Image (cartoon, rainbow, N blue to C red; front, side, top):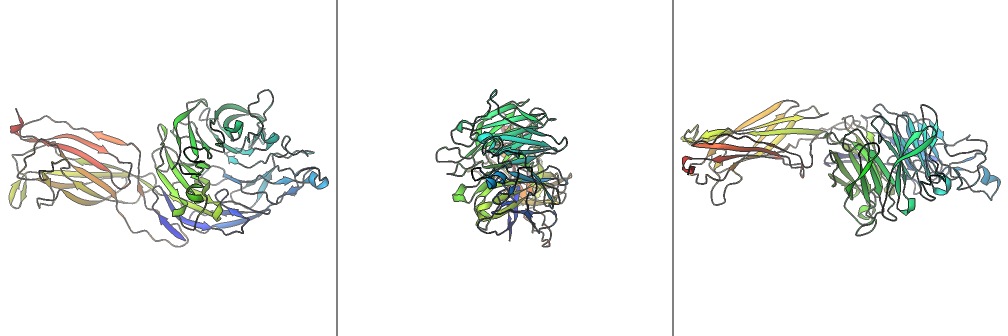
Length: 611
């Protein structure tokens, strides 16, 4: 099923649907399913040029896990969390099932409980062979809840180049913990709350979410752990790895009871200063309605000092949307040098779901979304679209990260492709002055005062190298008084003050077109400035058809930057019988993609103006 939707920087290409039985969910972690038995399903778009997806059935059993260990993989929820090692050339993939159980003692004695230790499987980039990791297993451990007996490792996970980070919220009677395995040193580091510090209380669910970033310095990596039940308000901790222990170096706290602050976290450098900032989801935060959800924004001031922004991200503030359930770093979608993020609201619009795109910027992040993508607009009756998000992969090799979105209530995963971005610089050149006593043009065989209006475009793109077709409208005398006709016109018919044009611009080249504007004979208003405007947009072109085995190239889109405005001022000496150029200003309207306007001004001056 092909659906080509113009969704600004993200373009929905194709919905791949894997139908499962009613007890199997695909989309729990964007492209991984939770199954009712020991089999997991993984959908992979492994070959970047190929539309065909591959399905891997993981019949995974842990055959040997310790002296007092017997595995039960049924209902393990393999795929409850999924992450990929960063890097352009592929890397390891970690898929976890937090409900994997050790049933050694429960089978021997009905008085003992099954121990939900949780399991993670580490795969190479061929996705064929998984290495099981059971970080919470301990020999002779039999008590449910005590220590690591019910830690449920892998309910969340995150990979860096060297670290495997796993959340274990059931540790020590649901105090929770974060477990970090260093693949280089082969050492395990953990956070254990002790009576001396008491930083985390019972029932906090520490490890419900995990992440990592550069909080203390650009050269170090710190670990993030969310505890959404901490004092019923939630808290997020930032840890540094000290040998085999995790040490708290910073923390941020929720304020609202039951908001589930910390159930999702995202470490991302929003302002391009080399330090990670922090986004914290509180999907059950309640405002005017109920459980609209919100995301708290913390900007890194250096050395892990996090300053909360004066606003929260709130999406549409929709009833029971649970905005903030998931947050993903999308990289720099719009080529402005700042990372952008996606936020899921899976229960918005009566469980149809939606995701929101927010753009990073020098101050941190825009408080309003640049884009909303609703599950209801994508077909296939998607439900809970946005329950999971996964990015970091460029599936079509166009130089931009794409994103997978899980919609598990409809057994679906959607891939949204990112469109290439075009940066356009335009200018509108007018003469410095025109002598009204000199008629340089002939209009209907009559000498006429005129001026040249030159429109120039230059285009750049980080990845796109093809020709860019632009169309534009040029309008004269926007400020003329309604009681008087336009003072300048095009086409030589004395009435039209607008003209249209097309240009084909190429990367790194300046492309200009000159139009002649004629002055009417009966000009009476010599006080109002004469304003010229040019508005431009990308020309619609026929979509390039591709074979069924390749991704068709996506149409580029003009860069949009909120609040971007440039002004160029030219000032010349006033003299008799001249038209004076007062100002040449450039305004970029980020509210729409279609038009970007430029306003140069000239004013009419005659000897009668001198008093």
